[in-house]
Image (cartoon, rainbow, N blue to C red):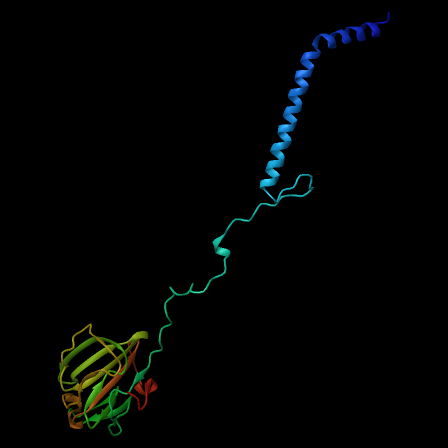
Length: 222
């Protein structure tokens, strides 16, 4: 008998003696295969984006980035409203007194000297003086040259000065005033221009420099 025949005879005997164990291993492998297929099928059913056998690459969903969302209606409700344009109106219901214009060299008959006139003088029948624009009282006092006067500070570096008033009323520094609010009445309290009688000496400044009031004043409106 050849060596191959002897080996096959021995292998056959081994299979006969251990056939029971081979069957157990085969059953376990079959059960494991069935369980694996069932689990895979269940996962595919739960995720419709995956399919068994499809030769496709599954792309992950992009992150939910709130910064890429388009603004919705009402998103600008927390923004500050646009700032209204600053306008100045006439400080009285009158007219310019004579030739007393801004930046002219005039002689003061009261003091007997020549000086640059840094404002505009107004007269009116009712003598009322009004705030030319919304602002805050930044100075008020009396002195012999200017008489009773009030300084109002406005936005954008503007100031308006009202001289030769009959008094300072109940105003104090820090008070808010509205455009058209009554500040007082014209008088001749301004010593430098006492000869003009009851009038308003009106000045305007921007960023600390005198400017021509009529560059900014809206004529014939109060």
